[in-house]
Image (cartoon, rainbow over all chains, first blue to last red; front, side, top):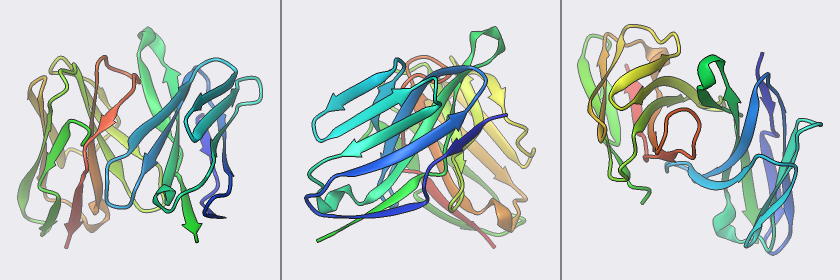
Length: 113
Length: 113
């Protein structure tokens, strides 16, 4: 079966660093996405990892370890506007070569002054 | 702005009503998706269309009926819904079907009374 776990809520201080973890168990792993979703808004694409290692994009970095079924999203120099939900999604390959995204429940991050 | 628009943004309906949700993408993508997002639960994939042909139906009750008249437009027709169908309904699109980077619309917040 498919299982994606991430913490429900996290809090952090403005200017600090926070790491949001995601563990997954899937049968046909074919990449991992992170999305950001502000309350009442659309999820927006943050990052994509398919190979092991760290992908850096400005203040945000994402790490993947396929052997451990583990990823994290690292947010540096936190700003108040980073308060949002962060969704981990695994791309799974099914029979016939078809892929689809399986989402975790999301981690709600609150950044305080 | 993600290039995906949805109307209406909010909808309240009774269990005997018939209503439709509309999604339009301005990105030239070939695949479109309907997701259901309930509080504290993962996004649930409902339907996937590729070049106007339905390729995925995740055992969604027949009271939800999708329609994809062309690659830019997607509808979700609602009929005799239940209170537990109250949720945020998100539309997304991608260049190719099945797990490529998906771009989401802002969603329709549905309340069934």
